[in-house]
Amino acid sequence: MRTVAAELVAILYDEGISHVFVNPGMHTAPLRQALADADAAGVPHPQLVLCVHEHVALCAAHGHHLAGGGPQAVMVHVESGPLNLGAATENARRDRVPVTLFCGGGDEWRRLIEEPTVTPEPARPEAALLGAVSKWAVDLSRGGDPSALMRRAFQVARSEPTGPTHLALSVELLGQPVGHSARRLPPPRPPAPDLAALDEMAELLVTAESPLIIAGRVGRNVASVHHLARLAETLAAPVVDFRNHVNLPPRHTLNVAMEARELLERADAILLLDVEVPCVPGLGPLPQQAWLLQIDTDCLKADQPDWVCPIEIAVTADTQLALPALQTLLADRVTGRRRQIQERRTRVERVLRAERETWRDRASSTHPSDRADGMMAELERWLPADTVIMEETIPGVGSTLRQLDRPPGHHFRSLASGPGWSLGAAMGARLARPGQPVVAICDGTAFVSGLPAAAFWSAHRGAAPFLSVVLDQAGRRPAEPERDVGTVARDSGAEVIAVTEAGEVAGALERLLATTRDGVCAVLDVRLPPGSEDDRPRSARKRSGLTSRSTATKRA
Image (cartoon, rainbow, N blue to C red; front, side, top):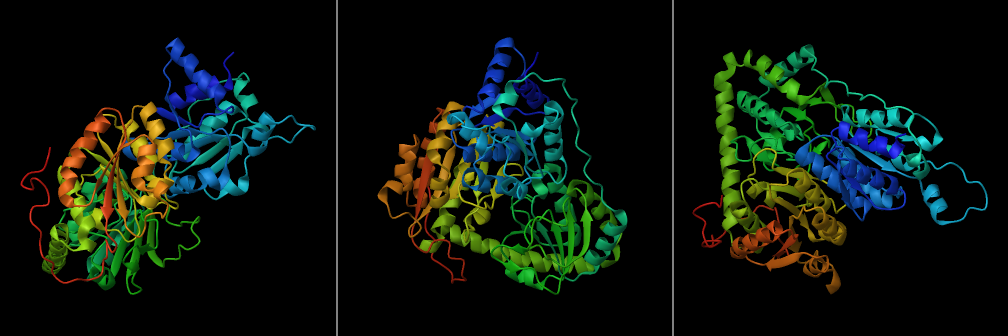
């Protein structure tokens, strides 16, 4: 009779899991054996990815979802609470990653390595640790149908708003026979918008003098990028793009990235699309005089105590469904306002042209505080067009938004609750898209916190090497020489090149990308001087000459 571990393997494959990220240990041995048995029997099964640290495993599943879509599965040998999983689980919750985490309890782990003197209590997960970051958590050691509850875990994780679920499986249970195989439980369809509420929203937007759109994760559905562009053009409304995903082509004439404070302060109607924070990082709170309108699968944000935005109209819906309907309602209203809208378009585009001219100046400036812009401009020029970028947002750093111009589905940003997301995420993205180069962008603190030894070991073993670009700013580097980015990277098994000038990027990038094609992780240590990324207004700077061996063409 089939065991629970073998049933889990069958369910993983049937649920669309292509890779299962496993932290090896005694608790995970039955799953690994079941995967080996399936492989020997020629039965379809997910690919096993061994991760020697829980944090790397969950970050890899996170990155795999962003780059490849679909549900994810992670198994760890012990539930380690906030030390190993807390920040990574919170990151997955914020980004609404449909991941199911299979784990054992701490009491169970102690029973496996110690001889108990009395009969212990049944193992169970720590509800206080899991409840705040999980949609659903169940301890199967306390009873229940394993097959049905495993199916249920994936159904809840994939239902909007998507997010992490937890399932505690004892090692004894994994070896027991399963009674029956439960059928797959499809998630509910995404919610459709309330047309009456959208009609009210359209009326407020079309009568506003200075409408503005803030986009968070609209680009998770690539088709929605086109819908957002049409909506912005219909209203002549600038778009603040958090770029968790590429929500609007970066060089679109109405994309302000996260700049243009003047446009935000003047806005009298703001449309929030899949936004998780009640402010614009770097630009401050939303203006009090503006009507706040919202479209999201989770408008209430009950898990965020600080979400107190006075939303005038909130529509619970998938933006992929709501934006075309809102566009249709707006098109019926703008006919008599074309002159007003054209004047607004001219005004907004004038402001954005000035901003983009500043961005170009920064890319070619010799001022130390613009060094990061020059480096990122060169990175954009020489990276292959199909490169996937996993960027861990760095507080106060806007050079990536100003200089990188990646198409939808090729640039993902995460404002991690704790540093160290990007390395594991890059490995997961490379597994999801094995034919494309993958680049992680982070600062020195995030690089060291990302456990490069563990991340690179798993990437090498899983044939998923990637390039890390570390914005290594003087003043933020650790004082201990042994914690230096280059030293840590080399000790972790990566090839390292350090650059201090933009003109060095092209050659270093060519060599390091070749290294990743040879199956080895690589690190570009971008050494920045103190004062880099100073975003205060500044006077015109002297332009430098060519910043690389050739700026006339972009490498294919």
